[in-house]
Amino acid sequence: MPYDERLAERVLDILGAEPSLVQKKMFGGVAVMLQGNLACGVLGSDLMVRVGKDEYEAALARPHVREMDFTGRPMRGWVVVGPEATDDDASLEDWVATGAAYALSLPPK
Image 1 (cartoon, rainbow, N blue to C red):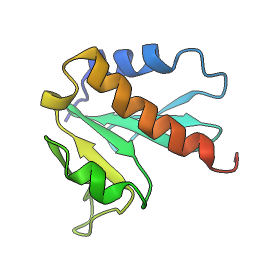
Image 2 (image 1 turned 180 degrees about the horizontal axis):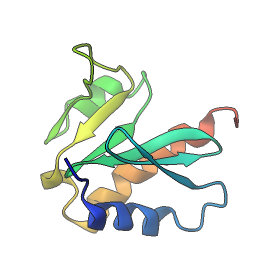
Image 3 (image 1 turned 90 degrees about the vertical axis):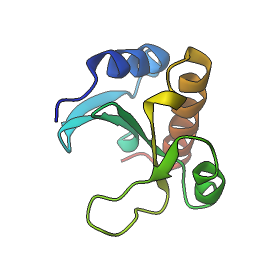
Image 4 (image 1 turned 135 degrees about the horizontal axis):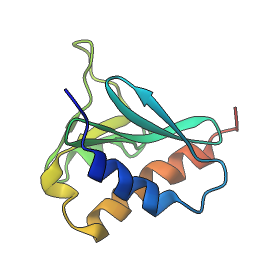
């Protein structure tokens, strides 16, 4: 399934000033890395966000959010945000900021 290129562009526009930003094609979509750590990505029309284990349950409780599950087992610390929750710029910025903050809190790779 191709990924939503417009959503990927919007994510990159939000993070554009981050000097450590690297974009990589992964999982059939595009992933965004900060300081070598995955922060978020676009898969199909969804945004995947690394929220960390401490914020995982709270993130799942938000509307249009589900577990990230590639293998039959949820990846704790990651969520998938549906397009309904990223249509407006403020919501997308909030989700991208969450992923960026978590990635930047980790030691650089």
